[in-house]
Image (cartoon, rainbow, N blue to C red; front, side, top):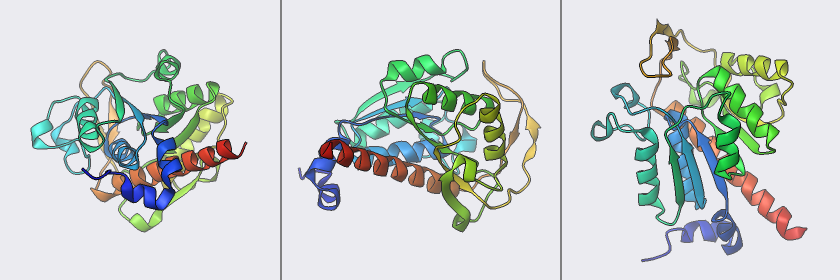
Length: 248
């Protein structure tokens, strides 16, 4: 069989493709955005991916999440995504962890994983801030997704550091939490500067970590755009890091 990464090698060169095989990313949240991050990192040849998500696939995920099929309903998202990655890139080492990230375990999860980069695809504001702060405390590079829900216009998706985002309520709340706790805002995010449409009223969420939350409207392509952009930023970071390491 022909090398599945031959087209990447034409674009990047053999040394860069080999370097990507030694890179390790932890993806927190394997839903709409995180699934696309995981898939595109695997297709880029990243050698190790840690997946962290406590949730299982539900029918309401089918309109936007790679892991969501009628055949995967009620299965852990991390298990479904891990199997998909192995089918794409059998040599990729996948660590699937069905866990809920909290203030009590975030730093331990990150430290034990051995990852060098964190892709934050969590939608719960408090735990999102906890993850980012924990990663910064450990000196890990963070790339974060802001709110893709309640948006419709793909032309309004942007890449900027958190302190340069605008119009996104999720980004505003995360900024406030990080500032309060003395954390840095100097990391790249994907966000939309489209004014969000109204969400549905709060409804309870089942499970041990269930809590009332607002339910956002979603469309198939917006989380995909966020995830593809986030994965592209991570791959570019690795390519630059590899060049810098080679030249030093």
